[in-house]
Amino acid sequence: MKEYSFHQSALQAQLLTACGIRTIIPENCKEISVQIFNKEKNYLSKKNAQRFFGLIQDIADPSQFVLDSLARFTGNKSWDQFKKQFIEQKPSPIHVQASKWML
Image 1 (tube, rainbow, N blue to C red):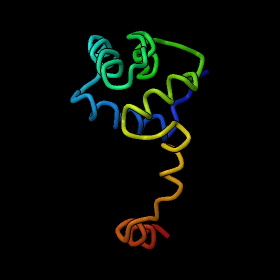
Image 2: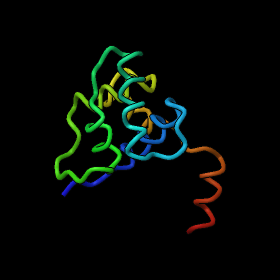
Image 3: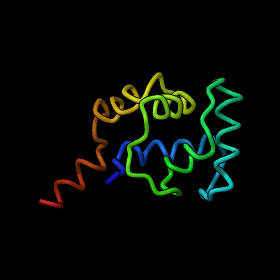
């Protein structure tokens, strides 16, 4: 069964922001498809966008093409580079302080 990762959730949030969409509904996926095509010249179908957001049930994970297309649209070089930025980020002082209180 397909599971959404932290990275996919982060990409979903960035994608909505980049498209100027506040809440995802199936009808918004057509607009996402059009915006990606206009900017990247990559065709990502409305159905693929709906699958990525979990609006259509699918047991398969998104393809590398879909993930790369979405990552590039949000200003990243690739899906792998998008994921890598989270690994390279250092925790902010607020997170470090909060983690001390959690011990």
